[in-house]
Length: 289
Figure 1 (cartoon, rainbow, N blue to C red):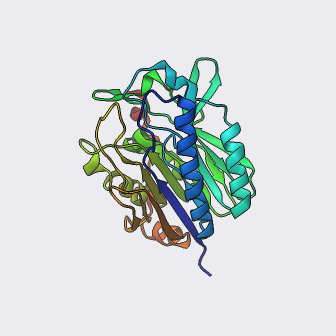
Figure 2: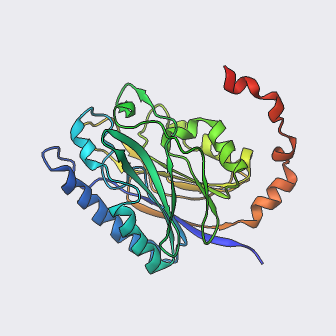
């Protein structure tokens, strides 16, 4: 009998594009919008759901404004506690990307993983932090992650997380596979332009090279006052053969849902023996250079 899991991705635009509004009010509007979409996903029978990068606010990294430090919270903390209630309500695993404070002045771009019974399983902290023009000043806001590449045994599948810019680095994608991931989620905030042509190239390549499913999430719309470009959505699921299973709108809020047959992982890996044939003893230079 096939081991099939119904998975979902939420992509959403920011409802408040006004810098005069307090950070807490912007976050509440984005949270309220997502809670309605989480309800919709739960009623549709989604078993594993992932939200977009720093889901409860705008992508504020085009600024270098310390006011956005007010958007941080502990993990676990208030938002993960709330998501635990929704996880229990729908017996749904939820991947929750938020802006984490570990201690005063120490902040991470983090994703918490909540199991279907509402229990907190752990978190991933974004490892690769960009800082480049125009508009991606992430080192102002985030420290590089220090938790490695964990994989979480959920009620339905083994789940790994890779966040946005991480997707450009194959090393972590391979580490997630070696750690046992069956599904890797990549919550992102990516605008049209330089990297758009890579959006449906890199992550299907990770899926093929590592023999797992990838769920790639990107927000939609434009966000004032920064206006660095249009977030182009196109959230999608891709299988271990590199085949697209479902893809979201380029312009609209969307819940992307796909049935993932986890037995396909074994089928693909019996054909493409990348894990058997890899030669780690020859790769020392990769970490020495």
